Image (tube, rainbow, N blue to C red; front, side, top):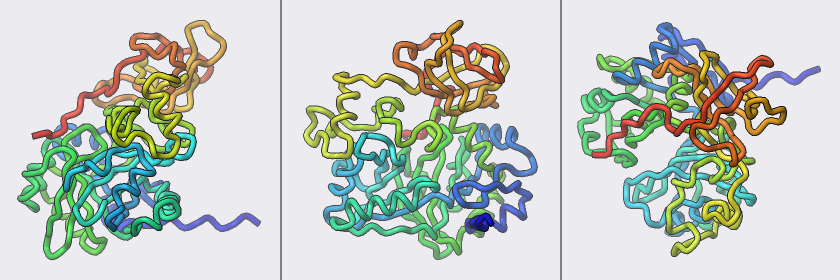
Length: 377
């Protein structure tokens, strides 16, 4: 007899999603809204012109405490943690001993602790990894019970300031503590859409009232996972498990920009993280990676989705594959990301994606597909 399927977990906003008419799907072990009655296209376009509210409470929130916490985290990620200012945020990559990416994350130096947000499907493995590798150097505390909301779009600040006036002072990749009706919040100005926006961590018991207060603002509508995916792909942002995983290195994934000079070859704190020899050799050109993540634009109106193989025109052997792809609502044309052999990864290179046995011409293009509109002050 087959084992009973594991029941899906619910975020603190589950009942609100149902009340709003969301279509729920399994994602990272949770029942999550993929779209609401107005549909994915409307939600995507509304986020680009106004403000979309996303429930991202399935993601993992953790804190690291102790005087050695920053140095300890630097031993696991190739980012500058020690040099990060108070209430400043950075993008990070948790690496394995081969330089492959275990997860990507955001981290903030909050003064008394380091606050991390990791991917929902990876959060338990990440917690075990952190506790095993640095648990003797600092306290590693999960806060998986907390809710996390993302408010994204050009009018997000206008809407959020009615509830939290102090957030006007934030710029991209900064954060601050806040209070709302007695609840302790932490707000960062960042997100996963390429738009200006915020991520708000708050207690589970305050989540529904706060979400409903945001949804009462005229700029704000609820948005599900479907539009979250199309927005992040237009922004050229990776989805863990698709565009990056344990088999990809930072250089292959075109994420070298996230590794500060102080951690690179010749830097004051070069190396000292898992897979450093391989990662740094790829970044400084001593051993360039054999493949690269690229953007792709279809030259025909045929959506190309993962894991379509990529060939040279007339070629029999694949030179790459697609990792994410869809019809872009903003550009009204098929776009994709994928990995391509280094010799064929130059901009303007034409490749053929194999879709249902037929070649679809695609052109290598720069990322992102849609320019970001982060608020940098």
